[in-house]
Amino acid sequence: MGVNLSDILEPEKVDLEHFSGRVLAIDAYNTLYQYLSIIRQPDGTPLSDSKGNTTSHLAGLFYRTSNFLELGIRPVFVFDGKPSYLKSDTLHARSERKKEAKAAYEKALEEGDLETARTKAQQTSKLTLKIAEEAKHLLDIMGLPWVQPPDGCEGEAQASHMASRGDVWAAASQDFDSLLFGTPLLVRNMTVTGRRKLPYKNQYITVEPEIIRLENVLAKLGISREQLIDLALMIGTDYNPGIRGIGPKTGLKYMKEFGNLETIMNEKGFEIFNLHAIRDLFMNPNVQTNYKIEWGEPDVNSLKQFLCQEHEFSENRIDSTLKKLQKAADRSKQKSLDAFF
Image (cartoon, rainbow, N blue to C red):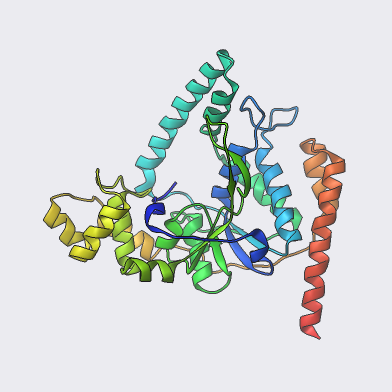
């Protein structure tokens, strides 16, 4: 989930067409979790084939990414390395919440409360190594690039590094952590756009893509990126629990009054463990620097074998989406030829 900075940020709302012709480094784990959570049956069970293999992530990745390509968006998916030891408490807490959600899901099913069941089921999503490897294989046969960072480095950090180098236009993730890692541009809501029903309410909202510019954020708040990281540490990140009672607005007030976290801790009498290690993780993440971003053509036969024969996707629907992929590949090839001549 990362740090929650929503109360002090003002994102720019756009539509998906805004990203046409742009290269985006997409946080793969973040995206796959969204597909595993959202793409489910009415009772909350994920999509699966007759052998019981979950296919929600494959459906989301194949169909949604094909829509991006049709619009001229050029995605590069960035996966996670093995989590840092600093994240162990967060991972344990998430595991416990999933257990509680699973129990609540089963209880709701017994009571015939499908709406609650579906909401609780979404909170039980697990991204296994098998799911990640299947996603990479699907991207390979779609002709799309992906990047694997080293252990200790998460997708947001790698994507932010790629954006900072100018190899991609922006980092795309739901997590505000990307700003702490230094991405000049953060794109949110790429994979969850559209009409969404609010849990437990007969009410729908329209989710739109949004852009957050780090330079504008720092100028508006009147702080540096280092101070933004310190502010996040007070609120709480995936690497520390934060200080009880301090949210974005109070944290910003303290930061502007005292200037740095050491002074704030001394004045307010609280402590943040592993302060320097967490700061360094955000400022100097152990990213992959030797990566290639190349697009190829979709392997139609392999896609049909993998999706239709192995996982029982509808061949008619696959065929119509394959046409989108092929058109996008042809368009990209033509642009390359035009540039050459």
